[in-house]
Image (cartoon, rainbow, N blue to C red; front, side, top):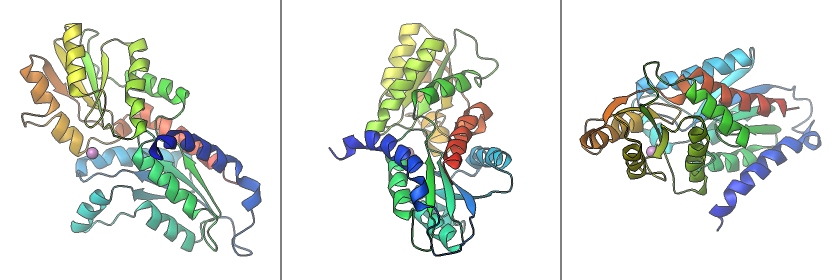
Length: 295
Ligand code: CO
């Protein structure tokens, strides 16, 4: 029950962060000068080649906010632990916000680089609320929505992905977008996106690794359409472990192997949505909206 309330509270909290404003201005221990910063928060990845997607979003953010310091955090503890074993330290959101408070940041825009408002985003929301108005710390934090939140995002992302399909894809070829999927109520964004794609192109299908629609749903839809060639693309910010193994891997249970065994010719495209400038632009718009709420 508690979990079912999350999608509603998410928007309510985004709004409350937006209007919480003037009451907090000037708090935080006397004469601390205003210092604005940005924290980009991704799930994270252990696949080095997948970093280019996050770097691309970072580059676009830096271009949109010249002179504003940008820091990073990963929400996945497992990813952070694997990276730590390799000697690469990446902060958790709580670590990054604590350090930013100590370093004198008074106003921080935190941008979620998650795809849906699922478990990772809602945990980030809770963390952000705990750090706001911290004594001698950050006065105000504005949290930017994940890629998909409002109906306008769904249209923007559908348009952006349609504009980013491989150049050699023909109308009769299918495009299968592999999302992560989740047990969280936020999973509804995946079948939701299918509606937006279907209005644009009946051969663009959304599937998920851990939620609905499933690979079985996708393969039934492909058979129904009499499709022969299928482009497989991640519907995740990075082409990380899920994209390289679950989607495009050579093991017999990968999407490429399963669909190939069913007679479809599969062409994996190992590009995270963060590498597609048109999609990354939607995240940047959310960051601009969050930053604009800082005062
Ligand atoms: Co996963």
